[in-house]
Image (tube, rainbow, N blue to C red; front, side, top):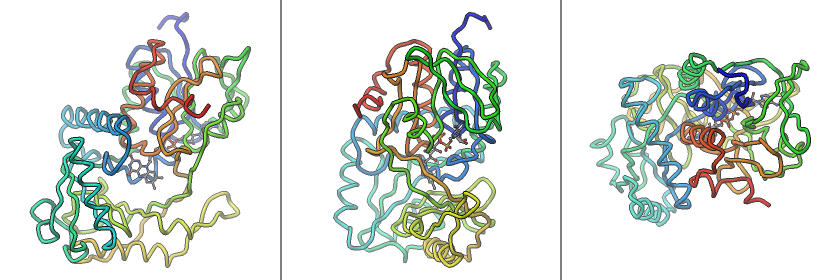
Length: 372
Ligand SMILES: Cc1cc2nc3c(=O)[nH]c(=O)nc-3n(C[C@H](O)[C@H](O)[C@H](O)COP(=O)(O)OP(=O)(O)OC[C@H]3O[C@@H](n4cnc5c(N)ncnc54)[C@H](O)[C@@H]3O)c2cc1C
């Protein structure tokens, strides 16, 4: 590696920073990934990680998500049988009084070629095992055979292995890193312990911390990050393979024979605690698991193994914020919801922009300059 090569520092060891660092190292760049604690210790360590482009959104965003799924499919084809990356489909339904919405979503998905089937409750077992048809409203459910899920901590280990083999440097437990500038451009970063890392390019991929860190550099990135909950159950005997997205609970299998479960409604019960973390009542967790059990054939008893709470990064307008920051020379940002679906493509396209100096057309709608 030549010492005259531009140096890039990626800040943030979640899946967006890891993927970006991985793709930069793959392209032969001089790259250091620096993170506050351990890898995937924040949102990427407690994600439902449903790989999808279901529902209604702009065509540009749909295309980006489909490219994200395409990269996962390539990975799955190259390494068949991975326990942590599965494409066993997704099943979704709406509350009984939202039957019109269900049909609208299905029509929208069909119109842009998303593999989408509206099926009667009694026919669900023909498509995917393990679901209790009694839980599905009469309007039916949407079956999306092309969807899947990924376990992000396993993906992170997979990506970081190649990153290290290609000469990438990893710094963990650095504490909150600060980006330093000089003359309107980045000059590097400094760890909480004061250790400097000079850089020509810095990628801000600190998940929920991106808006505040960008604001310190004079850059406004609107934020609507909520606090979220992910419950992982103890191992459970169920043939379920698909991801389920339903009004009261969403869930997917894990590589370890358990289920990961989340939903929006329990978040109203999450309270910050004195230690800087979050608490939730056992009753609410039990209620969420009861809702999840109702969805499964045989209604198995589900017990919580782990309740993980914390910020779920969501930009102010809901769309990804990916690309070069005009106001600060050498600064790129990666801040997004659905970061599991987007991880591989977001890292690839950010690395493309940094490596070539050219804007990638697929990232144009998602550049932070849209907020100016
Ligand atoms: C409950 C839940 C369900 C979800 N469901 C889905 C889903 O079904 N499908 C989907 O596609 N996506 C889903 N997501 C979203 C997806 O998981 C996130 O978008 C993704 O994990 C974000 O990754 P990230 O790297 O941007 O952020 P993070 O994983 O939060 O990583 C940011 C990293 O930066 C570090 N950091 C922060 N500040 C600093 C600093 N100053 N210096 C150094 N390091 C710092 C943190 O320690 C952390 O390691 C879900 C998320 C949650 C929480």
